[in-house]
Length: 201
Image 1 (tube, one colour):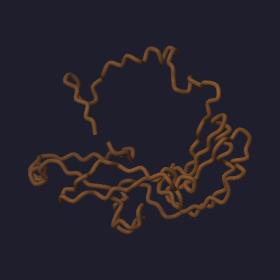
Image 2 (tube, rainbow, N blue to C red; image 1 turned 135 degrees about the vertical axis):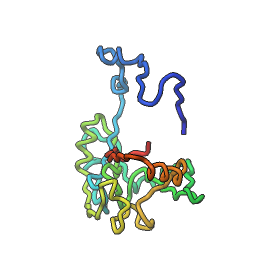
Image 3 (cartoon, rainbow, N blue to C red; image 1 turned 90 degrees about the vertical axis):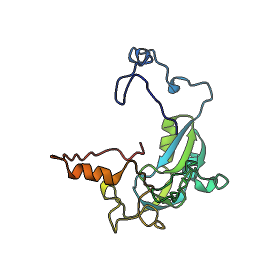
Image 4 (cartoon, helix red, strand yellow; image 1 turned 135 degrees about the horizontal axis):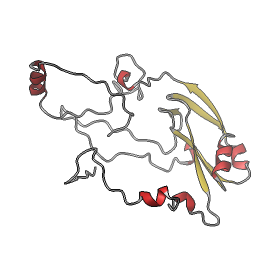
């Protein structure tokens, strides 16, 4: 993990951006602006369910769609290893957090909305998207918890059934006892509930 240290500016302070003028005046160049002859486009078909079992019944209609060059599912990628984090995370008790590998394409189960289940390559993004809608999939929705602050409640559905809870890892900083003592002696204590995106910051 790389840390960026700013000697002059603190967290949240504005930093000089030199690239904006080109973009806000219409002179920016994006990757989509570069389209050489013969370029193909990929589209990822993603899960509409937060948690579900699924079975891909048929992809032949998608493969036969005009302009389609390739349709991949997990069955085509058994030679590829799943994506794995290489960053070990030590827990407060000294143990290492259990790492969860991420499949390139999901095979039997999806664990969040947007999990990748198929990949289509075609002459255009529009053709690839249209072809993806021809892939026949049977979904069986499973129970899911979508509120972050309820994910660790007892008896909620588990993302990984073999785990004891939905906690990925735990990190602690500072001195809990000293902090509790300070708050206990404070004249006033203010509490603030912040709803944040479910990302690891």
